Amino acid sequence: GESVGLHLPTLSVQEGDNSIINCAYSNSASDYFIWYKQESGKGPQFIIDIRSNMDKRQGQRVTVLLNKTVKHLSLQIAATQPGDSAVYFCAENRDGGFKTIFGAGTRLFVKA
Amino acid sequence: DTEVTQTPKHLVMGMTNKKSLKCEQHMGHRAMYWYKQKAKKPPELMFVYSYEKLSINESVPSRFSPECPNSSLLNLHLHALQPEDSALYLCASSLQGSGKPQHFGDGTRLSIL
Figure 1 (spheres, rainbow over the protein chains, first blue to last red):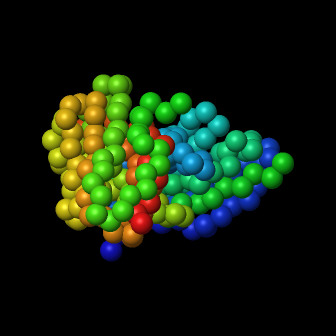
Figure 2: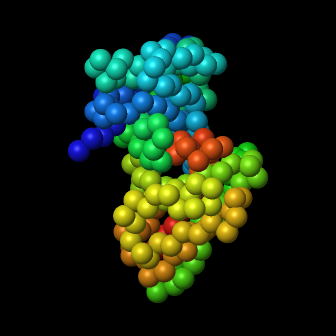
């Protein structure tokens, strides 16, 4: 079936370095993607989104890149901080649809 | 602090009990969602309400019964649950009825004995 998945289940980075979290999707009809951050004991927190008519979108310290050719998106976090330690989920939604499907998640560890 | 409030934070119930989970938001959002999350897994969509009407039911067993009394409130009524229903139940909302959840609550952790 169609799904959203991630390449790496865990990622460990040094504080101050940049982090890159990858996500592959297989549903070519998906045209809207969201990244969420989930800290322990909390609900997912919306980070950034991107539509399929864009290939890059920047927020505060975060950048999402979308490559529709290979059905891949990534989340880049600049100058990673200890507070960035969490599980990151990519999710896909079909515009006009009511379903947002989450990928498996990547746990980010930030080493001080 | 989350802008979507869920109560209770924890709930332990027997398989014959009837209980309800509650969710509230006062951001004027018109879509509200229930997700189920098992440990170390991603959230799974259960229900979507758009403008107070049920728009998505992801083949959820009838022992889970959602209700949206008004645009600010969302309930999940539970009856005759099974041990495998133990999970974190997350509520979310979004400004428009677009199916793109923007704000999540911190969930109700449900344990079925």
